[in-house]
Length: 181
Image (tube, rainbow, N blue to C red; front, top):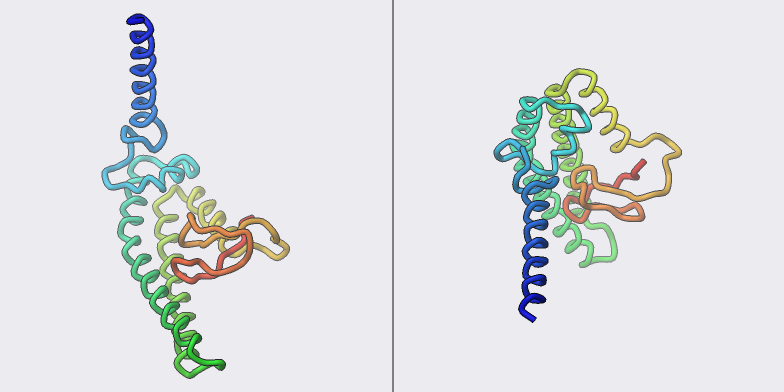
């Protein structure tokens, strides 16, 4: 009986060891070689666009600097969305206040998209020239798919985790969901 417990204990110890090794040494694990403060969601850029360590560190820095700008825009868009939703619920016609909120939301979405593209261009200039061009082309193809790109999943260009099976708006920022290619 004690031998069976020994085998079970050994198996359990091996399982815990394998889990720890996978967690700390595997992709996205604690043992990854990301620069201090680098966002793990950027790891794919290093591989896909053949980035040297310095290029990747600069992109991670640009990302960290841009995140508060993006978050502020998302908060402002969410506030406008909530105010618009409340105003639209009070009447059976478009009020002057709702029209002004719609115009403000459109202006803010355009500002947000401009800031987003400034960020993308700054990131592309950090990459080797050919990779930077390929990165911008990849983004353009996803943000503004050509005519005839239909069906498939839709996503938010600012929030990659947001997707849907049909057109709509991002629940985080209110931007139109774009079709994936």
